[in-house]
Image 1 (cartoon, rainbow, N blue to C red):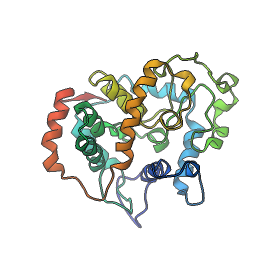
Image 2: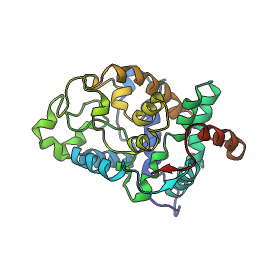
Image 3: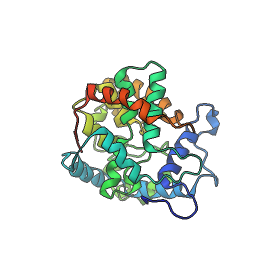
Image 4: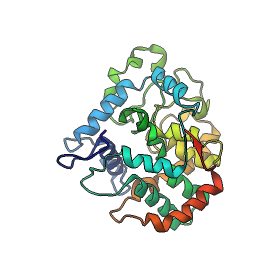
Length: 285
């Protein structure tokens, strides 16, 4: 992913993926129109999922947790993290000139307009900040994309399930049963999901935010569960209760984007106070 724009304006894979997710989960679509993948799907999205599904093994996920969850990379404020994303994300989307800060603020402002809880609004502001993983040289397939459990059989409701044939875990019999390495109703806290920005930001913020907010952050990309209702046999009662909040948040994440950029200067004082209410000046990343 380039940090500068050059040549013809082409959407990068992260932008293509986000547009693809929005169109895939359009609430106005008929049921039969979901999960229809055609020649219109951007090639970059298909290639993204090919790489993601081939390389998100259980060993890979566990190695990334060991590498990143000690949170010893750097100290950084929320606003510094958003500024960093401006450097990382190539703003070559042909449909909008909006920045990552703008997307975060649009999501948060949509929550705010609906009178959501203050922690809910804050989650809207924070939810994509885990994408700073790109700062450390992580490829996009290890940062964004739909997340899913590893160490057990993949659901056929995961986008492009055919690409899992190239994943080495497909040759591990223990990982190809319904429960795999897990026990029935063990709870998602005991389940390893594919690695990405959701899991990373969960660890960055877990000491500070309410449990409902942490579920929204940790599982907002886990479409196989919160939209497809898969893996119910791994969830416990707490998961089923708290996934209400994940589904509530999803509408703001997907459908808040518009061409009108928020006034960052005017909004920042409100969000600085909101951040200070819940989080320290500097977070460990």
